[in-house]
Image 1: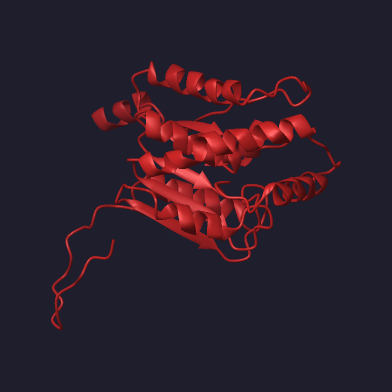
Image 2: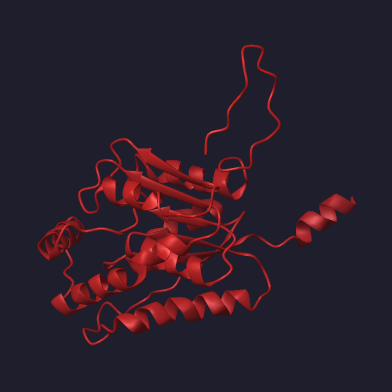
Length: 242
């Protein structure tokens, strides 16, 4: 009976969701909210006003994420952070600055080859939306500034981190995550590459539930864990791999 009462009053894990660049913004997390509403408290918000072409100050975009993070920390609860694409880079920055319990990065946009590839990739990504929606040059430039300002924060992340990327991502190369995964200093980290996965892993019906299940396993300490006691190996010493 006591355990049943405790479970009723136990608060759900508090998860801050940082969205990517494009018209969808915080709605990118709608499936996570639908599937996990009984287990997690997902906090979503829009970093910028997609209809305001003057809302293109990169410092203000970052500050809005900081303000939301600080608001959640005032609750004195553990805060977990998810970031997708541009949001993955910002989420890494937040994890380097604040006390983040765990960090989950989905197709993080750490690296572009050059400016032309940025514009081409974003145009293709947006045109694939139904109906096609365009972002202004000023908004695109702001996106690039945000990434430039936050991308090196991955060196300072000191919390358990799970990074997921599709190897069929035509917006951000999977090589970007491979390169930046090695920069994470915490030893509890893992990069999972989904074969055939596109950029928008949370929207593609072939990958979105898999990504959510990986998130659940990560949150429930079933992957990326400290090494448990190992069985004796009669043929030699078991070596732990980091």
